[in-house]
Image (cartoon, rainbow, N blue to C red):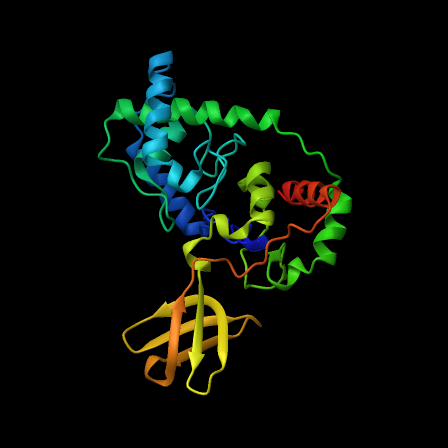
Length: 269
């Protein structure tokens, strides 16, 4: 799925950041120092501020987090759970400073009032989690996951392949809608680090896989068996960077199976 391909699904989930113990400690020290003059409560919470927060979110954040905060290349913001804390002050610091070693950039050049307006809107998005209801059975969904061979490409709690995104914690990172859409139409949102390449060798052999790296002379990919491959461009008949996910759409699942698969993935916290 690669919006996930159950692969994007997973593939990325992209925005999850793992810090080492020292890195986490240093970040905490930095945030406590830089946040000394940041109030605990949001001083801009009027309806006009929330409306402006929504406008700013759509303009600056929706490309990664989804128009309604449901997640994409960035994490799902509708759960009310945040890696670096969910208080108004902590959200302000996260938006202002960004997250090191991730795709989350700093907004330090933004006016403080704009960051607070974004905080207000993100907090409102976080209340949406309570309204999400799964229609399927997670236990039945696990059987669908296993039957469909998802583990061949996806890692889940340390078990599975690496061709698709790691699904560990995907239920916290993605909304129900995003999970469903990624299963049915994996190509709708393919993370950059799961883009596909197709190469044709001089003897006519076609190899397709996940793009890893490229320079003027060579191209590296992970093939469908999960093996890293390197090709000299001079020894290829041709190569193509694709927009489609390598994960096939699972439109043939019965409605009950799809509901249960979504419920199972949502239960993976």
